[in-house]
Length: 376
Image (tube, rainbow, N blue to C red; front, side, top):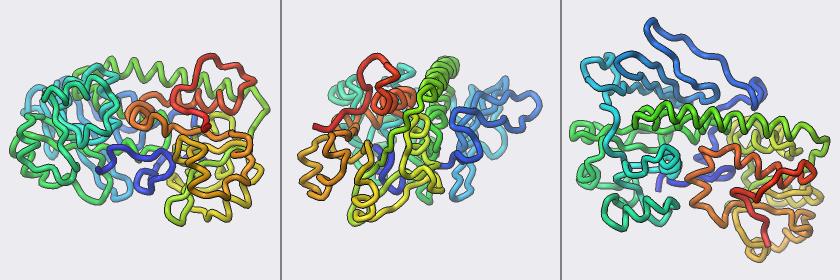
């Protein structure tokens, strides 16, 4: 299943993040780009792979695949006659969508548009209760492996749009054929954004597609404010606990690089992340021996890839030598993985608040953890 759920810190294909954290502060926006006459550039402050230009007749959407330097342009409007040359026309609001990533489901749920989803790859990976119910009643389809879905099955859903996780070197299979049959394929690069608020800004794409762009903008403004307020809260303490992250996949330990999504979140939460000085927006690779040796006295371990301390020690008994294991300072989202993949992208403030609660109990943040749980 291509990217229905992409690991926050570990899976290699999801960690090609693009935010340059050493140049732009994690809690500060980027500058706006050039806009044409009679166009209004929409509110994108952090995302690097998407931008919007509002016109009276509709909205131009530009998508950028940075690794391959490929650009896509769509025009979302009422009349195809207004579509600029070279852009693909999508009549909005759309009537149905096939969502091939859990993040797409989460964004549509925020906009109260789960009813628009006509298909997902596999119902087993769906958290949203409303969508699961619609699938059980035949109002949406569990279509199978996203790259292997028959064209006939896609067309049968009568979805105007198929959204897939782009950035794997090619477009969606039989995309031209699907377009002729009435289904426009749109690549989504939310997983390539390194800034937490940049990932969340992809909500605007779903806002424009559904006619709820104002609702999306208002939601993002609230998330941004809460995120910044939490950043400032974390700065009020001099306590900077040492943290390491990741787990072993095969013979390689994968951790988020210092400029990556995971690295930025840990930094903004006021942690002294062991990989903070590493370059890049993807993952860093370590050996098990390196981790056991250098992280022996590290206070916290984040994202071990399991929800059980017993299971963790079964995987490798050497973990028992780590202080984080001895003191049970290990936290992960594995107990509610489907919910995390669907919703955390549009709730980065809640992920950040989890980390602040874990690392800085002295700050007295009220409430329970949103996504993370201590391993027992």
